[in-house]
Image 1 (cartoon, rainbow, N blue to C red):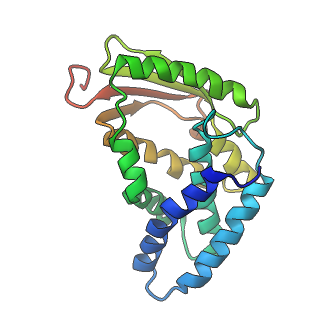
Image 2 (cartoon, rainbow, N blue to C red; image 1 turned 90 degrees about the vertical axis):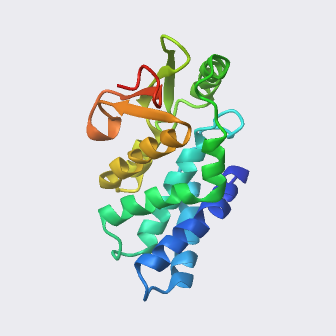
Amino acid sequence: MKISLCEKIMWYALSPTIFKFIEQYWEDIDIQSIKRLSKGNYKAMISRTPDIGSFRKNPLRIPLAGGMLWLSVYDAMEGKMNEEQFGEMVSATIEAPMLKKNFQKQKPFDIKTQKKKIEKNKIANAASDSEFNWNTELILGRDENEYTVIYHRCGLCALGKQEHHEELIPYMCKMDYETIAMTGGVLKRQGTLASGADCCDFYVCKKDSKWDK
C-alpha cells in the first residue's frame, strides 16, 4: 500500500491526541523519540500492508489506517506500554477533535442513510478481496431506529496477525461501543472475529428508543 491522503490525514488528525495521552501517562518519556519512531513504524507498516482501494470507494481504509497508527505507536513504546494501556490509548483517541466531530455529525438512524450505506458497502466489498478488506453486510431494522451490521471479514484482524499483535485486536474492537454512542446509538454485540466468532454481529439501536431494552 502506498501512503495516500487518507493515511496522512489520520496521522495529523489523531497523533496529537495520542501523544498527549502518552505524555500524561508516562511523565518521564522522551516524547520526541516516540513520535519519530512511531512515524517511521507507520510508514513501514503502510508499505507492507496490501492496498484495499481508495477511501473514496472504500471508507474502511480509514479504520485500517487507524489500526496501523495505534500499532506503530505501541511498537515505538518498546515494551513500556502493556495491553491494557494500549486499550486506554485507543479509547483516548476518540477525543481527537476531527474524529469526534465526524461521528457526532453522522445520521445513522435515517432510512435513506441506511440504504445508501448498503450500496456503499457493495462498492467497498468489491474494492478488494484481500483479507485486509472488510466484508460488510447491513441489514435494515424494523424501523429506522435500529439496524444490524455483519462483518464477515475484518481488516484489523488481518493487520494484527501481520504485525504479530493478535492480542491487541480485541482492544481495537472495544472502540466500536464508544464511537456508536457518539452517533446516538447503543451497540449490542454477541461476538467478534477477533474473539473467534464466525462474524462480528453489530445490532445497533437508537438510544432511548423502544428497541433500547
